[in-house]
Length: 520
Image (tube, rainbow, N blue to C red; front, side):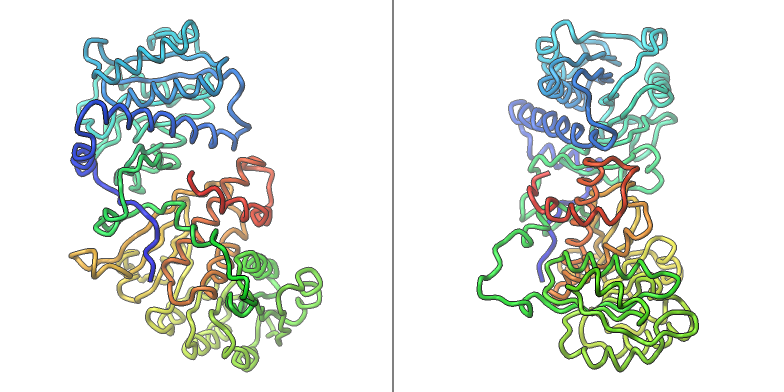
């Protein structure tokens, strides 16, 4: 079993200790700050594409404190000016110049030399009087060393920045100012939080989501492979989790070498869900896909997507699959490597009854999605053979009050909890790595609101199912691969077409580009 490429999530205190052990002098700190500034600028430029792209002459507002977060923000601004030489910068420094840490002061001097007359210092009074428009407001006031109390002047500045009506993108360096283990009364409200080197646990807390926005990791190479194996219970997935999908395939292989997935779903009232699932599975690299759908759907589906094998199945009075589908599935199970049940299936009691019976008989791993996510179906699965893909409402339906780690541990399942930041939880590796023996949660930072559309989850299930058929012995890895691949394709789609005027099926065209490059 292969552990997914990931880095640990640390508390603010743990991060301080970790960085102190890595960055032992100002020379190393300066190199890290430069890498953070450059990585942050590039990530911000990419993310800005979702709302039309950073203008040729952007106007930037930079909020700077005395610590290294301020230095990171200043260096990021310097790199942004190199990418957009016609840009202008307003800087608000919240500390006296004499109190700036040496590297922050150095970054400020370099920015002023780079920007020349295009960089100016302003005060909050001037900002209020001018009420200028800004393309980006970059928050570098406080870092993870912040402790209460928050001074009145900075609190007023944060409140002004949060309510200014003409800031297009608010970006926090490492974590929003005012956010800590104990939050300040006023906190910078970011559209994106760019974690520099380490993702701090406070930015992943659901209660802080309003302030954090979307989280990106600016990877500075703080963790080596050996560090990951001893990581805490929460981890962040890296793009390298997809590296196996970019390797050469054997020139001597045939379609059977890449797995056979059975997909079971579809109904009169939800005819599109199973089609999206099959289309995504076909793009997963799987060798064969057989889809069991109501017979009235087959003529159209087979004509449009002949790559899949469509099995016409009897339907019940509600327009879903009748229990007589079971012999048809059983006849093909011997040639299957994985099964996916649920998209558009319908939730009639008779339907759930035959699904329970089928799941009890399975000797291959199964993905349960949508209507198949029922407590009795989950309980019927063979331990260690189940991937479940619920959203929050579906998870509450099956969890009976258990937390995500508790549920994974009890049922020996891999759970993909879909949401604004999808989490993948598994008991795998826990006994070796955690003294508590608890489940591990992997967080995916890819994807965004473009995925908040009907059919998005159906396509994710198809990707995971197709990957599982290719690698049926490694449920955790394929679940993580599916989520990251799906999310990266969503990022590319949003950057190419914006967040609004898209159809979720357009995600399919971004799956190939999402595999390369894997460095961002």
